[in-house]
Amino acid sequence: MPQADTVFQSRSDGISAEGVRDQYADGKAAKVWEIFIGDKKSRTENYRNFLVEKLRDNGCKRVLDVACGTGVDSIMLLEEGFQVVSIDASDKMLKYALKERWNRRKEATFDNWVIEEANWLTLYDDIQHLIGDGFDAVICLGNSFAHLLDNYGDQREQIQAIQNFEKCVKPGGLLLIDHRNYDSIMDSGATPAKSIYYNSSHTADIKTSVLYVARKPALVTMDYVISTGQGDGTCEFRLSYYPHQLAIFEDILKGIFKNSESHELYGDFKSLDKVDNPAFYIHVVKKSK
Ligand SMILES: C[S@@+](CC[C@H](N)C(=O)[O-])C[C@H]1O[C@@H](n2cnc3c(N)ncnc32)[C@H](O)[C@@H]1O
Image 1: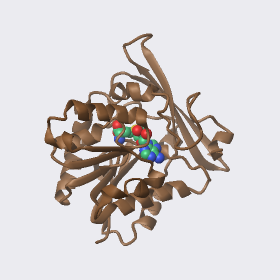
Image 2: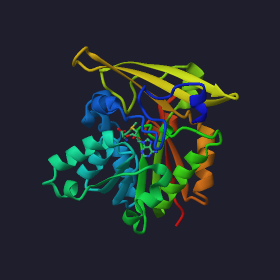
Image 3: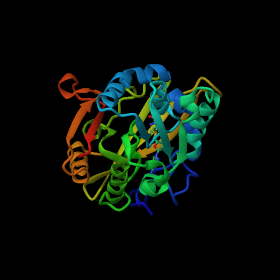
Image 4: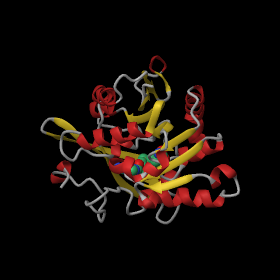
C-alpha cells in the first residue's frame, strides 16, 4: 500500500489502488477538466509564446507530451505546426484528446497526431517504437508530474520516471517540466485557486491539506470545488500530489541530466526577477550533446 495511504486516503472513493494509480479513473475530473482550466485559448495564451519560442529557438520540431490529459498543450503545439506524440496513463483523459483528433482529422497535423496510453514508470519500453533518435523536446506541464506520489519514501519512482523522460530526449534536446510552488503552499497552507494554468471563473475553492510522514512533507491533497452550471451546479473531486520542494527537485534533475548544457528556472513562465512568489516553477533542462 502506498506509504501515504496508510494514514490518509488520497483518491476519491472507488478508484483502485492497484496498478497505475489513475486519479482520474472515476471520470469526474476528466469531465470537468476543461471547465476547470478555463477557456482553452486564454489559458494557453499565458504561455504559448514562451513555449513556442523556447522550442523554436532550440530547433525543436518533434515533441513528446508525456502528460497530455485532455490534450490542451498538445493541441496548442499542433496548431503551431509541431509534430506531437502525446501520452497519458488515464484513458478517461485521453478520450477527450482522441475525440479532438477525430474531429480535426482533415487537418494534416491532427491526422498525424500520435496518441497512446502509457505510464511514466515504463515509458521508455511503452513507446520505444516511437522514440527513434529521441524527441527534440519532452514536455510535462500543468502540474502533472506531482501526481506521481512517493510510494516508498525515497522518491525512487519519481527518479525512475524522470530517467525515462531523459531517455526519450535526444542529445541537445529539452525537457520542460513544472510543479506548483509547494514551498509556498506548505508555508501558507493554501493553494491559489486561480493561476497561469487554471483561470476559470468556475473554480470556487481548492481546500488544501498537507500530510507529513516522519517529519517530511509527503502528500498534498487538494479538494477542488468547481461550479459547473450544470445539474446541482457543483462538482467536487480530490487529487493528491507530491509536494516537490524546489531545491530537492533541482538536485534530482541535475543528478539525472548529468553535464546538461543548461538548466533554466522560470516562475509562471517569466524570469524569476519578474515574478514575486510564483504559483508554478518551470524547469527547462537542455540535455548534453
Ligand atoms: C493535471 S493533468 C494535466 C494534463 C495537461 N497537461 C493539462 O495541463 O491540462 C495530469 C495528467 O497526468 C497524467 N498522469 C499522472 N500520472 C501519470 C503517469 N504515471 N503516467 C502517465 N500519465 C500520468 C494524468 O492521467 C493526467 O491526465
